[in-house]
Length: 164
Image 1 (cartoon, rainbow, N blue to C red):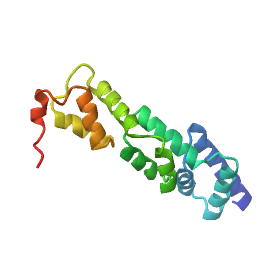
Image 2 (cartoon, helix red, strand yellow):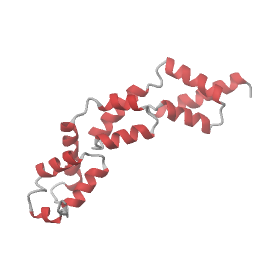
Image 3 (cartoon, helix red, strand yellow):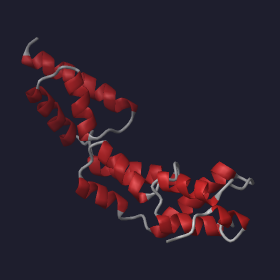
Image 4 (tube, helix red, strand yellow):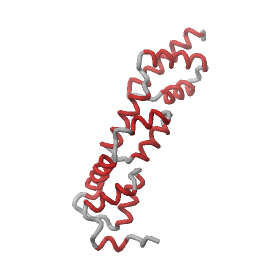
């Protein structure tokens, strides 16, 4: 296959890959590598996609961080991990997380608890805490959410291990 045909094929693969949803630069590069395209062809395709804003890690990170916080109820740590896993550079991750503060994380944690438990109460405070921590919610926000939901300050509190 000639270089021009490789470029066209790689561009087609990349645009189909981007048609489904926004992707990071690294996700597109990885997809093209798996497609067997050369590094030079991948670089040329990425350059064009960046030029026409088909790939924009900053916009992707901001939108994805918002979605993970509001829809999935993830905390800042989990959002940072998910963006890092997708190849977003650290400085862009920091910019994407800047708009979110402790109150946003607390609100997301409360919504997740309401979604998970509804009118039921968790079987233990520790189970509830672990659930929020796995979602990347800070310990402070998790405790505040459990207190606001009435899970702390009740008989469930006895399930919580004593602090050293």
